[in-house]
Image (cartoon, rainbow, N blue to C red; front, side, top):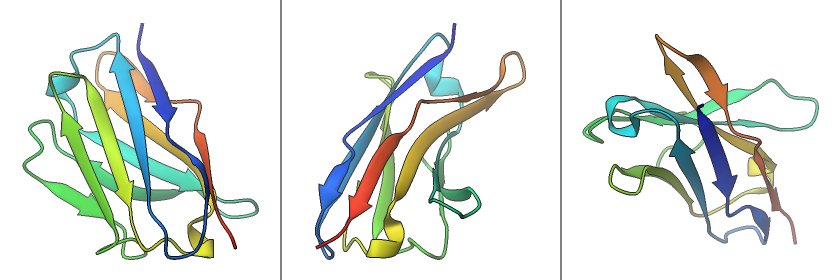
Amino acid sequence: QVQLVESGGGLVQPGGSLGLSCAASGFTFSYYTMKWSRQAPGKERELVATITSSGGSTYYADSVKGRFTISRDNVKNTVYLQMNSLKPDDTAVYYCHVRGATFGDYWGQGTQVTVSS
């Protein structure tokens, strides 16, 4: 069955960096676009970044463009989100997710990122 397990969240000071990982299993990882979204308390869920199956194309929300980098390793079945120049507004639970025609939408359990001094 599809499983997505995020890791790497934590507490970081404004201006700092943090790297998230999402280990995938249960499907052919290299076939699918992978996505990172986030949800802050009291706010709507926001799509942060996506990366196509080969890694050749990426998308970033305007709020993170130039600061976040999404990447993937199709051998390790892992997608990453490198976050630099973090701001308090980046505080949220971050989720990786995937959508497949045969298995629908799957989301990881999420990892908390807190940006605070």
